[in-house]
Image (cartoon, rainbow, N blue to C red; front, side, top):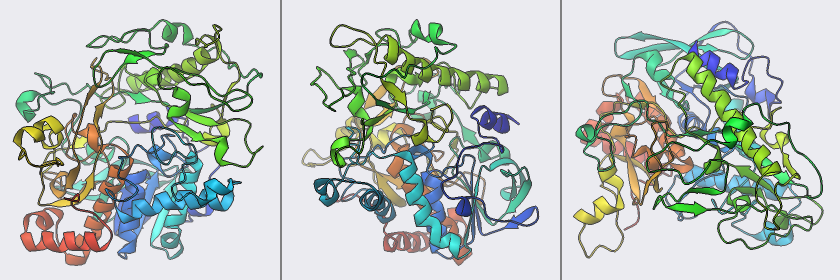
Length: 567
């Protein structure tokens, strides 16, 4: 019931009027109220899509469910351009993720009026946003993912159910027998399979199946992590954010109605340790790596498209997804940017540990915060000319596919996490921790090596301000691996995590939660399920028998996985 209410509060009911990118793929005809496949994947984000790609290319029949009407998770329904490491163009991800990135560029080349220079640029970045080498529109990610999955749909290996959510599970001891799915047309579907992959945003299958899991922050006694609190804090979870897209039509007035909670958010100062430097609706924030006060800038483009130099990062450029300079003159009246900033991180509660009323309150609070931020930008934000507000800022409802102009789903940074055979700790990936134990002659530090690696990743250990009152926890990490043990629950035999619900801690999750790593986790989970079916083996048997592990890792490498970083 809590899950259903959560989705209803997000506006994701079966009666939603939102347009589907591809109705033929999204709503297949299923007869009866039962379906049996080889692998059931719950959650159509990047991990879920990558899991489906892996399992279907190995010949398995897969059911993939997604509660919204868009595939793509962080990239699409949450409207978050990819956060990636600096080596992503050449290494540090799977071959299929790199293929996805190139398909995004090809989509623009094939469908958009690019300039000749942009079309010929092998590393085209449609938005030229500073956060990523590939800032692009959410719906493009949907189109590309559907294209990559289309052959499996056509051959009958893959069923995709959009607007579908899990409501319960049938469990026999240490095995899941089936999951009950509420479909978009109001039916209840019983989905059974030998393997289940939980690729949902918040680990929804874990409580439904009785799989042991952890929430929030572990204690130092539990993990030995330098940045862990003295006592465990299960309610202390990273902030979530309701993103939105805007452009700027200088000289026009697109001011929204004053949000109901604007007066609250206008005067709100986060109660954090160390303290936040100013009201949330200002251009001040705590610089993550020092926690010292730092003032950002915000200046949208003028009518001629020009942007002045600013004394600090111009938030307009940070997650810009359309840069008009990449397109033929006259194509765009303005660039487009995604608002996912410190100013709309919601810190007053979480969406995991509370009851239905708490979830409703925090969802609405997050919506109101984002709308209040937009209204503040339109009416009160300081301008370089001494004025206030940018009335020409316009919600781009069309680009996020919703009636209210906010993304289809809040951007979730932290999930329930399985109690795993192996848990990744801060000390495995922290640059300071690794430097302390490394050979002084080693030029390039690496994380603790894992013999059971099933992938690689690299991202700063970055925790946003939390519902427990922590300010940023942010420090350098080193290139790391994804150990197979973190994908295997301590007890359950046929449930595999497929995204940020693997065996990390509250802290190490800060490195393993972003786009390319989530893809790698999901692709490894899908390949693991298929491999176990082919070999009649259990996941923990694959990990704990040397020859079985070697065979699986060889399979992954032949499929384009990188298991180690270059020396």
